Image 1: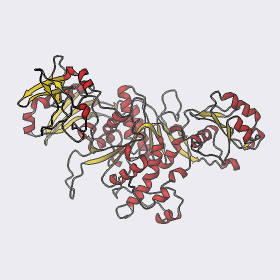
Image 2: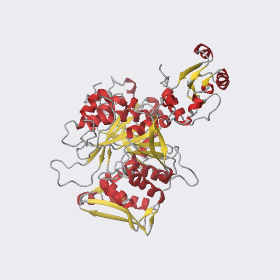
Image 3: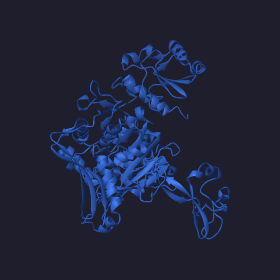
Length: 612
């Protein structure tokens, strides 16, 4: 497979492996826990800190658990002022970057290389966090979308590319554009593992069906007809599909075979066994060339509609609607030029998640992803969780503050408006399809009646809009929910065991050694015990003999001895291999091997067991 080479790639290729682990430190005063509970890392999370280090900090607790990643990174337009500041320990990289974090602007001829250097390690860590069923959604424009696809193909595998979705971000042209008025952004979508990816079909809208559902059966079910004969594309000839070439008996007894337009033998769409089971869906039409079988496709007869690769702003929102959303909640909403609309992310959640999914946004910005998750939970009673990472200083005052207000409600007096439907329309289209258009409008009116005081319909400047209006006197209602606000602690330096300074807690070190040994995150750390058991995988049981006390670590109690080996063997009812982390041992490895125990000395032997 072709790969993309860029300046600095050899230095950042494995940089994500050398990024130090940091402990997530809870800040209770900035958190918003559920009533009667304390802030917890098991709750929704908002993390303030560099997103590369934050992603590494999440690995011990969330590796392989994230179901949907939505990120909106810098588009690298040259006007954003983002900086490349990853601590890559290469003299050549430091010389290239002039040992400082300079804003990347349009005059920087190497801005594309720097952007790729910034994204490469983050994408590697994001994939480690994804579950087997998970998917990544990344929004970009034409500045970097083509380069991003090449490195995503390399990191995720070309076979896991699901699609390039076009989001219609603008609802009106930019009159000051030099050449084209940009109307869309790209959303590149990748699966972690194509056979396992969770992808939901969208529910059929039975009240607002496309016009080709033009027939109704005796039970008033809407359907349309499709020829049973395959249309003759590549692979649909008799030679290519001999098992789909067979006779079907028409109403007058005529034997009908699939024929292509040129008269050559073709193929049916269905096998004979399926035809026998689905004969109730077959209808016959007789024309000049004889009988032709058709089959009914019912609007309510499938498991939904596959999502399409164009997301229209009338369905998911535009840049204009997203700005209106944030301004209504925050006075500082003008700080964001292009926040993503909540409707867009909710639409993605409908496709890529279920009611218990974990959603990660490591370029959190204004917090639209958290807003969308809370709105989805409020609507269906789900238990989705979000993790936001924001490196800027406004992580608390703007990102988290928006989430607080969305949860609790916010001061607002006036009329809340929500655009329910938008479509460009000409007078000739309206007069020709008046009944269908009015049915669509009526559908949205009925749907919104319970949530709004008034539904306003308007055709202006060639655009039909349906808007819900709700009068608010003092407070806009909250959606409910909670979150824990975190910052990044000091790096977990395993060598600190030698000095006794800055020792990590038992739980933090347990998660760290468990992940480094197995590549998996630990759901829950077992309480300290004689055998030091902390958790297990399908293959291993992991033990840690440790206390955050220099005197204890230097004592005989810290060593793996016969008493502890007996306890480990007694607790190992499954016969799995036991991996024991400790500062010393009083038994030979030969004796330990007989008990299916492998000793890993702290701090030197912290390594990945799998594959060794």
